[in-house]
Image (tube, rainbow, N blue to C red; front, side):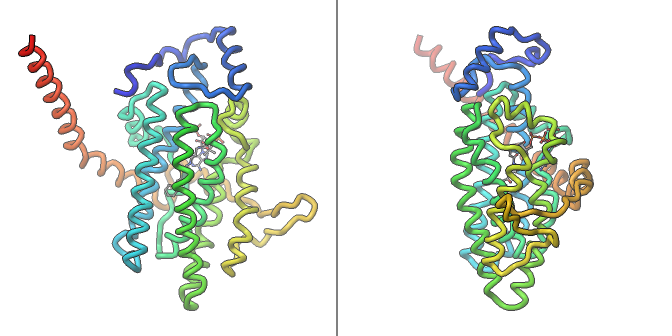
Length: 333
Ligand code: FAQ
């Protein structure tokens, strides 16, 4: 429904762009004007935004699964209530993001199908298991922490609907980050076993979190163009470094050790130097061979199939409402 009023068409993809229109578009982007849904935009800009926003939406939806695993086993009622609210927030983020992606002319059904068929990606991080309660702390602290680092600059993205969706998402993510860190503070100040559990979670989540920022800049296929279009404001490596610099003191405060023997403060650059990331592991996860890829896809497909009756009922209800309105209008003539 959202898409019907828009001027998008798949055929646009193959059209040779009008140079004057491209120049006017680039001038607006350079002047920091927001591009809105019905404004003219190059087909490649539309395509890369649809790709990024929909993959972001899929990540939020799949991202509910690792934490959802602990809803029934949260240690206290307060922790359970906070985790329930967080998981619900992730669902909400997925919905704002699908709505933002729809303004570019693809329907939500199409986008979801691309994810369920394995054509569209979702963030690598959600293919790792949540083995202990400390993983819930580590996800909030590190995964939401990395998400915020990446998403605050997206609030200034050149595409208006995405930028505006990100403002609310970031506010909620920062609450998520704090509740995760608070779990880590509690565990690291707790018993020897609790502290060991927190350390073990950090050991397992640290490197996958660094991979969340995407491949190194030289291997980032979309990075340069997205930066020129002011979709991305910082490169993958710049954001990764910012995340490490912000997170190391937080780990020190917890009394936990980051699992990187090469991590060292560099007086000259005023940044933390870090060890080599295992990019083969990242590629394996992206090609479907991470520890939980199959489980995640199976869970999403099952949820989609189980929800078919709800979608059918919504369509039937809308049809009934339409025919009732038509009958009432006819009777009034
Ligand atoms: N996982 O050329 P680039 C969250 C793909 S939300 C999987 O550098 P780009 C909240 C990339 O798509 C987390 N694939 O790409 C939460 C491309 O493949 P394609 C999600 C990845 O777009 C917290 C290829 O590699 N956040 O955590 C990944 O310029 C807790 C080449 O890469 C967003 O989506 C990856 N990690 O930069 C929820 C933020 N990295 O499409 C629940 C928005 C790269 O050509 C619980 N997205 N790829 O087939 C972005 O900022 C960007 O898309 C990047 C990648 C930075 C992720």
